[in-house]
Length: 252
Image 1: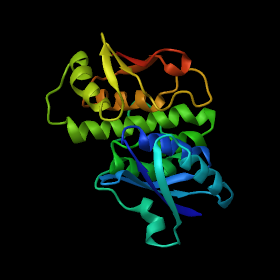
Image 2 (image 1 turned 120 degrees about the vertical axis):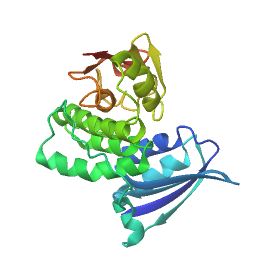
Image 3 (image 1 turned 90 degrees about the horizontal axis):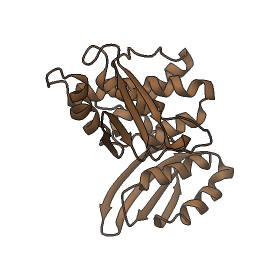
Image 4 (image 1 turned 180 degrees about the horizontal axis):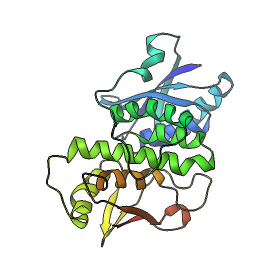
């Protein structure tokens, strides 16, 4: 079934990610979201799809969530509203990744459907990525998310940084990777490494380095024909393995 939730909250920061994870935990999929400020506060509208049997649990968890002041729910009948997620984007990450092999044909079909949504909603991209991560097998998870990250990273480079001159790797990390990452996560430089404090891919039931999408994104931003040939991005520390932050090193 498709249900539209209208949530009122006091603050915007972290709201979509937190409630999106609640939606996923109840076996629903977030099809589309919209957030705006009003006299009531921050209003988040979410169109979700999932089993009838899980609706009461989802409503209870949303109603008791510490970020939620109030919410309304309404079923959505089949029609244009239920197909919001299929709207075409203005642009799509179409650049072919050069550092990782494409996933299997079945995964590729899902990826090509997902990429326009990521382009349309960027930088609010983590909910559909977490949904995909949840559905992938452990063997599929790293190559698939890394590949998507490279596609998105190359697209962000073309969109935001292609008019600049070619930079040495260290300068590219400072002037391309750092500002690009700060659009989506809390990032800072520790020497030559880039550290992320709030990766949403950590602590999700597995142990060890898990930020495959972010690693791919950095590779797409800085590697390939527009960047450093032969670039390797290594996640040498991860909160999922007990570190204080997820840290990425760059090697050519």
